[in-house]
Length: 95
Image (cartoon, rainbow, N blue to C red; front, side):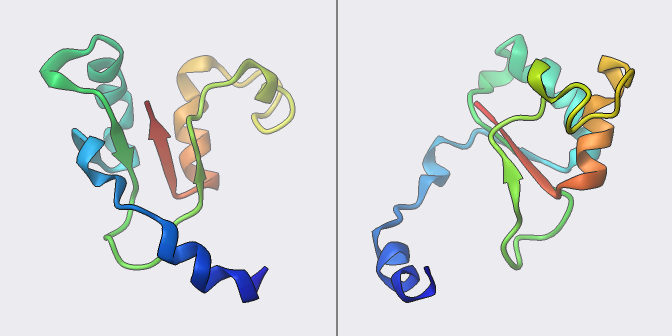
C-alpha cells in the first residue's frame, strides 16, 4: 500500500469547497441540529477536535443502528452516541 500512496495523493482533489461549516466534536450536537434542519446554509460539516495539523481518522457519520451493541456499548442512549464516538475517533463527517 505504501508504494501506491504518492500516486494516490496526487489524484486527490481538494474537497474543501463543499464544506460549509467546521466545528469541534464538542460543538457537534448543536451543529448536527443545524445540519439536520438545513439552517444557516449548512450542507457539509467537518468536525474535529484538533487543529488542521496531521491526519485524523474518522468515519462518514456517527449514527448508525448497526453500530448499537457493536461499536456503541449495548444500552448506550442515543443522545450519548456522539459523545462516545468522539471519545474513540477524532473526526467525523456529516453530509
